[in-house]
Image (tube, rainbow, N blue to C red; front, side, top):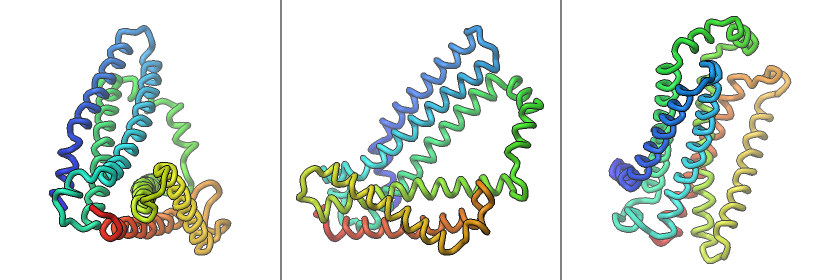
Length: 261
């Protein structure tokens, strides 16, 4: 599987490199414009924060599109190892794409965090330290403090939930594409059909998750007002992992047995 993952990155390293270069150039341009402007450091940090918020949204949208196209393109054109380097099982092919998607997402996140750290700490270290030590910052921290909850642990579990949800989203999309490309291969309006299947899978995923969590735990007794408990989040993560495994197995089975690769 390592060779398949390496092949995926070889196919897309140019695109990733060009995108990273564009982001670096934009970041440098914004920093220069802010430095030569007449705004106060606090105003500059606000504008820089808005820039990075927009970059994060662009990162995520392009990432989702690339992960979808990485699978759909090979099914449409039978290119790359899916056709040329067979035999490779459907489970191995799909697994390599999922791992590649995760690694690519971590790479995007690393680049983003490095740019964020260099831009804020490197250029606005003093005003940033002053802001963190201010009474306003202390008041905000006190306002968001959750009584009886370890914020670091809660944040970690929330990040894990986000990670599992994103991977589950990919697997759901792959399952929708696989169903359309195999069982409904001869139907017209393939893109629309894939979208409808995806929406049905998303509805089923949500219904199953909500039903199971409601049956296992009482929302009134187990969940603090406005704040899900650790147990609630962990159970949702477990359910999402199981459903993701189901989507993965469905896609891999169809890929191996119902499609002519």
